[in-house]
Amino acid sequence: MKIKPIDATPSSTLYEQVADRIRTLISEGTLQDGDRLPSVRKLHQQLSISISTVLEAYRSLEDQGVIEARPQSGYFVKPVHLNPPDEPHQCTLPKQALPVDISLAFRVSETMRDTCNVGLGTAVPGIELLPVDALNRLMGKILRTNPALLHTYSPSNGCEALRHEVAKRLMEAGCSLSPDDLVITNGATEAIHLALRAVTKPGDIVAIESPTYYGFLEILESLHLKALEISTHPKDGISLEQLEIALEQRPIAACLLVSNFSNPLGSCMSDSKKKHLLELLERYDVPLIEDDTYGETFLSGHRPKAIKAFDTTERVLYCASVSKTLSPGLRIGWCAPGRYQMKVQQLKMAMNWTTAIAPQLTVAAFLSTGSYDRHLRHLRRAYQAQLSRMTQAICEYFPCPTRVTRPGGGHVLWLELPNEFDAMALYEKALEHRISVAPGNMFSPSGNYTNCLRLNCGLPWSQTINDAMQTLGSLVKQQLAKKMLGVEERNDGLE
Ligand SMILES: Cc1ncc(COP(=O)(O)O)c(C=O)c1O
Image 1 (cartoon, protein in one colour):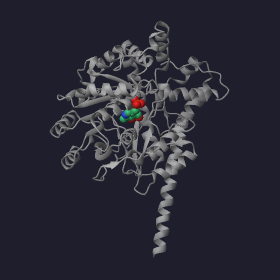
Image 2 (cartoon, rainbow, N blue to C red):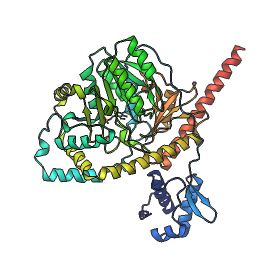
Image 3 (cartoon, rainbow, N blue to C red):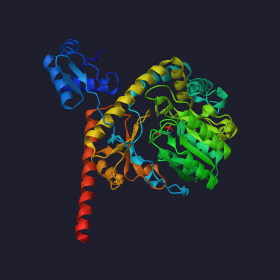
Image 4 (cartoon, rainbow, N blue to C red):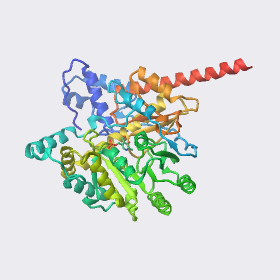
């Protein structure tokens, strides 16, 4: 293993730089739990620094609990011996469909995007993990070789080259689609927006997972749709029993869910559940909007199949993007609308005619090079390492019992704290410490989950994140202790 040479930067000492390098190798997954670190002598030779500097770096990492010394054997990445915390409960939900109010989500997501805060609120990958240089080089080459082409419109359903690459990749999700079955969009957000518009009218009811990605709520609100929350399990997703009861009781215009590694729960439906869901929707003749934005972020085994793979009646409007794997800023997503193809294409034209051509060609070029799979392997290792470090930090710093999800993909964790915990109060307090978190009630139109939090694990582990987690843990403990005291005081008063 080669460690990058040390720069002579005045802002940090030599030993801190060495410790940082090792921490990065661990957070990116190059060094994994139990792996042996380079010997002190080897690092001293490789980096041309003194033995005492290497030792100081290793000792500081040891103090932080990142590595451990084993007698006569050297230094090793400290395995995360977790007694994994319990997973959150499934929630009991209101039985009526509700209009959506996104004023809270809007206010909170504004502060979550503030780059001055430690970004544990938004679900974004760390920029260090994305192939920024390769994408910039490809875009530069496209700009040089095709300067005029970039200033023209692409067809409204998107560039053929990109649709071709996406259709090829979707074979791994079990889908047999031709490039003509796809419409390229501005991210998954636009794909979902178009899909919802194609199958609903204002006032309709849409069945959603609970908790659900708050971006869905923003779209539902903008289209004047009502949301019906369906209980969802952190492991295998939406409850088909609850969905069936809902379908029996009222007209539901569409079902909208994340099939693989949902946001925020990280749940992933089994193949048999995906088939049962389709059978159920077929019985009630309801279209499904499937968001598979996280499908390629599986942490072990194989890429899970899309529900679209089992769709024999063309009722699935499949949506996804490269925002969690390549670049959220290029805004490249797609929709495979099945029987609603013409409608979605027309809506896309009416909305903004087409998606900008330069990002489309850049993503097409990246997908065609074969570098994508190599990049994904690296990214998944990094997400896995980060999820496990964050879980470890929760075990260390948060009060017991804090329940935490164990997602098999994606890069977010969902935490459930005792009922008296107030996630909004923590959100406000954490902002004073320049830390952003996503309070649970953002993920529910009925304002459920006031005792829950979502944490982003997309950023490489660092001292800053460690400190932020420690601060959050103390703030949670302080808040709960105050509440306990308050209850005791009230009880005293009553007696
Ligand atoms: C489940 C889910 N779908 C869609 C999006 C947004 O995707 P895009 O940036 O491609 O519009 C997100 C972003 O967090 C997400 O979590």
